[in-house]
Amino acid sequence: MQIIRAITGYFFSLIGVTLCIFTFYLFHQTLFTFPNKMEPQYVEDTYAYEAQQAELYGEYFGSVLFIFLSMLVAPRCFSVGKRLVRPEKKSSPLHYNEPFILYLRSFIADKGGGKTVDPFFSMSGTEEESLVSVLNEIAPVFAIGNPSDRYLPYGANRIYVEDAEWKAKVHELAEHAKFVVLRLGYTSNFWWEVEKCMNIVGAEKILFIIPYKYKELPKLESYLFEHGFQTKTLSVDRSKPAKGEIASMLYYEKPGVFTFKNLPKHRFAYFSLSYIDVLKSAMADYSARFGLKYKQKNTQRKAIYIQLILLFLVCLFFVLSGISQIYLIQHR
Image 1 (cartoon, helix red, strand yellow):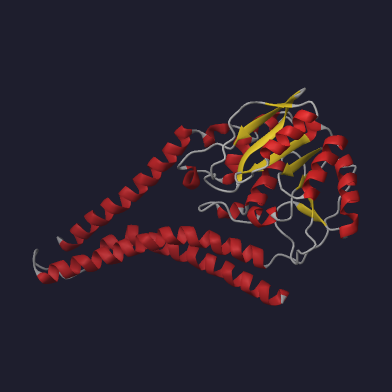
Image 2 (cartoon, rainbow, N blue to C red; image 1 turned 120 degrees about the horizontal axis):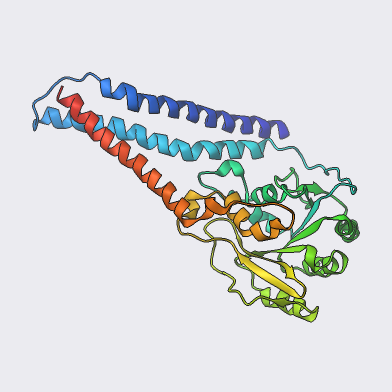
């Protein structure tokens, strides 16, 4: 079965490579070969002239459309191919004398975290891969693996233990972790992890990840209040994010206070920003305590509009170029 998956994965990767090569070929044909195309000259406003014009428009704009579609499909092929060739699950080695981050979540959350989040940046992978990519700049990320995993998930390094041992393992990992990331869930096991981590590592070393559908946030706020913590009265965005499922983050700001940080929202962010940029912006203040300074220029409205204007200009160039080239071909 693994051999079949690997062959299929390489096949998808080969499709991605073929699309990339064919895209460059069409790009060259459209800009350099098509303008020099030799066609019979017909009198304007005749049926032959109109038929030739329609054929030229179809050839030119068909190639342009294929170029744009290939730019979307090719990265997806590479992404699917990468997932199919992933190895069978295997515990990652962990050394307690080296700093690491512990990522805790309900196994149910792996379904959402395993979805590809970027339409144009899908090589960055899934939501969990993007989150781990940001956290890896601080320290490697480890998580308890789902016993039902057959193949190694992409994202955090997995440590697989028996069902009867996972609580002891979480306790052990939390004692040595640089800090703990908790993706909010609903199960009793998750709330046990919250209480255990609050007692072991302390509130200042916990980063809560809040999914947009999460309905038990008041329960978490009540829990923090009972333990002497206030949460800043900032509005938590419960609406569906432009990409991914993470709506906001909650972390220790100063003694007795937790603060919310919503992920930056913009209606065009889905097309203009990678998910890694979005997460880096949301975590900028939290990451600064580890000496990391993130430039947020990639998440500013100005930068988004510049990217969209450039995309519009590229599309306009192809449209005007096609119209002018077809006119010159028919009026040589």
